[in-house]
Image 1 (tube, rainbow, N blue to C red):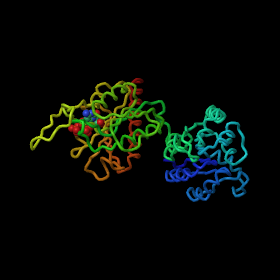
Image 2: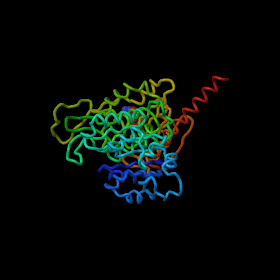
Image 3: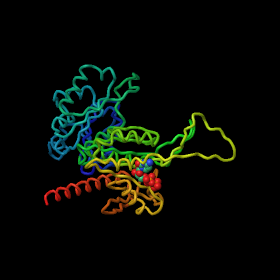
Image 4: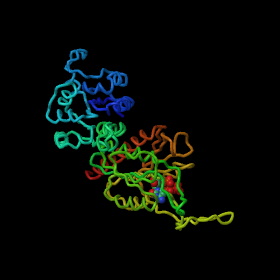
Length: 409
Ligand code: CTP
């Protein structure tokens, strides 16, 4: 995801500096070119060798280090950087950046960088709430820097309050949002549904399915990283919710239908990857159903077909993508759904194919539109999400070009 991107990590003298080793490692695994700059104080908390081993590069501490092949390193690095993250940022370094002071490698580089700068303060909660620190943070924001709010919890000094550096996964999400993809969905609103629905039988029991939400969450994340304003309507799942996405949690098909209806009209793209129950118990018993006799029958009624409703109420220019999970006759059944539900594209997968289906980190998808059937290879759900969005954008462009052509003839 980060191939060809230069990420500068500026690490300052806070105990939270140790968390940055994990972040550096995550970035390297995503193929980023990671450059680490530490203040002299930061080296008291974690040794530069840790970062040198992880990034396979010299960790910069001293502005006047002569090992930099006679380049003015802070300037050449500043020119190459795609994003700079100063984390943990101490009150001292925040103050220096707020007033343009540049007396070490980190602050000189930050000053010379024209790319996006993200600052994650970490310090004692009393220091964090000191008006001087708060004023300095506002100054950084006024200069266009993004400030990540510290988390609440027990701090190194045993005080409880906000001042904790967020976990590396969260810091990574900020970096990915900034540089992972071209922002080709900027200005677009995207609605994604994901996960299973849960249909109550009584206060103890319910009917559900094996969906884990992985595919839908990957789609929501991909759209967010491409600049879209994303709403995710999700059934119960155990996987982490994507960052920077408006998440609406529901339980039943009826709740999903209501949540989707409430925001469908304003969407440019709707992707329905949820595994919605087709039937629900006709009556939800108020009390636990007691065991009685050797068998029991549960009366079920049909749920609303949300995708079909969306197809019937599609506004001009809106793109509707449904999913189709089959165990046989995948293409034929999916084509029927495409037509019956007035959908622009169906992402079909065969549950019986190795590497596809519920719970796996991979999928084998076939993208079906009126004009074509495109078989994707076995790939990660993150990659499949990217391919689905690429195809939606390609179809939209093709349609726009076709309409423009018709207008001109
Ligand atoms: N879907 C929906 N509302 C339902 C059932 C399904 O919106 N009540 C959507 C799913 O989110 C998916 C698509 O319809 O995008 C196809 O779902 P799938 O379960 O494969 O097919 P069904 O239409 O339910 O038909 P069948 O179960 O008979 O294959």
